[in-house]
Image (cartoon, rainbow, N blue to C red; front, side, top):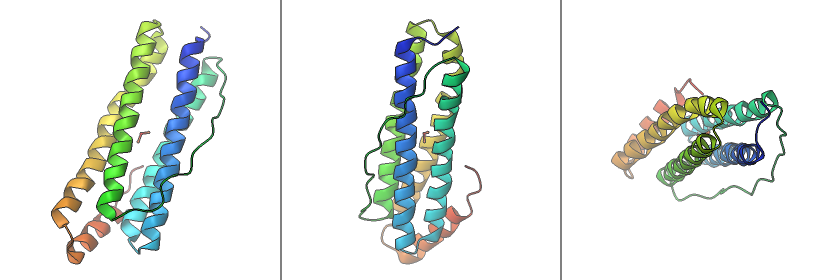
Length: 165
Ligand code: FEO
């Protein structure tokens, strides 16, 4: 069954949000590279890859449903931050925005009785729990570290060992 227009439009907006997230995380990776936090930069690169994969899941899904992908413009992402904690707080905020958007899309699909889209979105509902958790873990650790350079470097090294994404 061909996808309905309101859902097609909402999925195109979600593709834009996922790509904007990828763009923001790439900008955060650049900030960390500039400040010699190579572990955090690595973490952000992996996160950027994940966001591109999310966008492509929606992209491919629209095609599978005979829908039309219409890419939207991306704004310039933030590129100056106060500290590593500031970066991860912004990334957590971004994930919460994405979660809210996925939930709205889910409710729209239910309202339109589009069972295939509801089913596809279940993966994203679960994924967002993980996405928020991994950003929150970093925020919690960085809050504990405060301004101690030794603790910051330890968390940076730990972030550099991230292998998923
Ligand atoms: Fe694609 Fe991090 O949500």
